[in-house]
Amino acid sequence: MLSEQEIQRYKRHLLLPEMGTEGQFALKNARVLVIGAGGLGNAVLPYLAAAGVGDVTVVDKDVVDISNLQRQVLFTENDLGKSKSSTIVQRLLQINSTGKYHSVEQYFTESNALELTKNKDVIIDCVDQIDVRYLINDLAVHHQIPMVYGAIHRFEGQVAVFNYQEGATYRCAFPKNEYKSVAPNCEEVGVIGVLPGIIGLYQAMETIKIITGIGTVLSNKIMMVDLLHNSNHTITIEKKSNSINTSKIVVSSIMEQKMENEIIDFDASQLEEVIENNQGLKIIDIQYQTNVKSIKGVEVTHIPVSEFEQEMDRLDKSQTILLYCAHGVNSQWATRLLKQNDFEKIYHLVGGITSV
Amino acid sequence: MKINTLYFGIIAELKGLSSEIQDYNSDLSINQLKLDLNTAIPALNEINYSVAVNQKMVSDDVSLCEGDEVSFFPPFAGG
Image 1 (cartoon, rainbow over the protein chains, first blue to last red):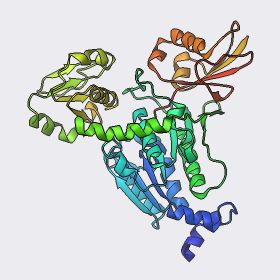
Image 2 (tube, rainbow over the protein chains, first blue to last red):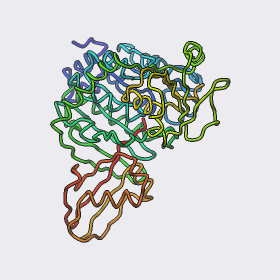
Image 3 (cartoon, helix red, strand yellow):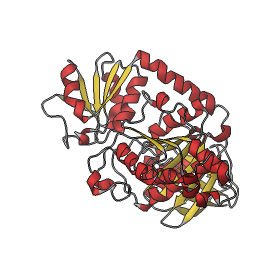
Image 4 (tube, rainbow over the protein chains, first blue to last red):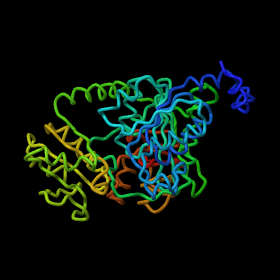
């Protein structure tokens, strides 16, 4: 039950008949996984900690950059260059020291996805890549837990709860078309700083509703909010009967593919080591425009991302390949494409050449 | 017949507006609307997006009626 100190701390929650001691106790026992400690994560996390969510894991490998401070309000100028996930965990402990917070300084990838999503009640999707959102969805389906989705674009946001009580999934709202790119765009898009705050707080509220069982969860729907014109548009999504099976296959095929061919994610600090230890490595730059920044002293082949799919056939599948782009988004897409096409060993520079 | 179309995210950005009312002949399907939109904005051929009629997501073969509201919405990437 709740301690005397907890009763004092959560007094305003306990005054809500919908919430009561039972709801507060549910929050205390909840295990939540927050993937991404950027704009959305910065809004979701302090409110979850303040609300008394007992066990929170934050996954993000990024470090704080000065351009983050415009919207990622938990970070200060003193945090520049520090790990986002561990900095946030420090902040959460200051907000509410009774919770357990774990930081995982990794990107959420096919290699760690299964392990990170084990024994969780809710996954909150705060990432900035569509490919990763499909991966989160598939793991949510695999573990039969809800995925609280938030996504932003300039002045607009999307919120939804997928896979809630066997409801519609991310793949029902956005069926993946293998022949179309999932907008793998390395170019940075502008965003109004307030937007991730508002969308993230919708995610926090949906999470609290799921855990405590109060209200109506935003399931089988996607809500779109336009802050520039104050419009709010909610679309009903139907559960597609085959989406769960498809997702399960995807998760198990991830594990099978691991045995056959290998993607090795590495970051800027390991670049030299990777090049040194792999003789005959083919290094491919898939930036739209190259020479902006490339790797000095080694031979680099340039294949712009727009031509990558056609040019891929000319590459030797048995040769070890190192792929990079500007920020690591397009290259992640290209890496998966190579993997699907049976290339044996692919090194992928996470964070792109700009992080070198 | 008049159709009210709403655009979201990158589609609104590429289109340069977030909504418009257009006049069409009858026998109009989502497929045809998408074809028209992608022809007007070729970049959309590369992007995966979903469509809703009267705030309910539908498949491409659905036919439209006078006064329908059609929403074109892509998944947003940012976080």
